Length: 236
Image (tube, rainbow, N blue to C red; front, side, top):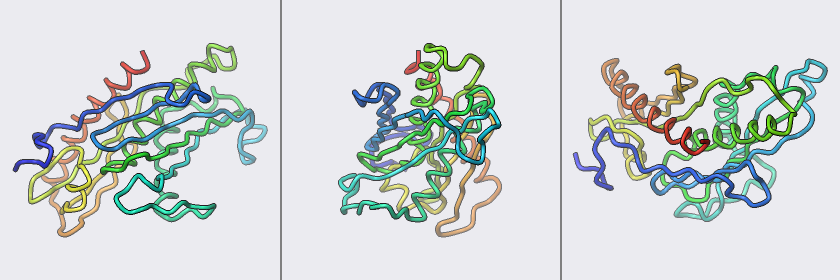
């Protein structure tokens, strides 16, 4: 099948990572994945959450939001009320980042990553994870440069990508027009060493087979390996 943007089934969208997107927040990055753009910014709070007080451990968490003009129909602002989808994505991003962070080495401080979707064309949560890692790693590097931390806080990179089955064909990195028509939709987060952090797979219109699952995971691994190379280049 021919994809709307001309890509092959196993070809991801073009991805660009630009550090320093916000002038007032040095540890920030703009990730562009096809038509999806997400700004990720890391800030440090010099205290841990109450449940970690006195343990010597830190915390990494995330917040996620979509700007009103990021979608074809206006996206309402949260105005203090977080919907279920937003809350689920925030927890997902946080889990992925903590999976590659040694919280004991961070000390009693919190790193918060804000992910704001500027343009949504599918894969906003996976782009947020990929960009958030770069913001986090850059933030930790700045803490090390200032002498605030010294150990190996970041163990390895983590990135995420979407895969799915559209018209019976497994595809890598779905744009919105593909995602909205998918028989099966899946988001995969994986570390540089090839270990999975999260697999979210849903049969949208029909069940899928073990062979199809293996095909989707193989596509995801291919896409994530490329994303991690792009992350490393941005951080270099």
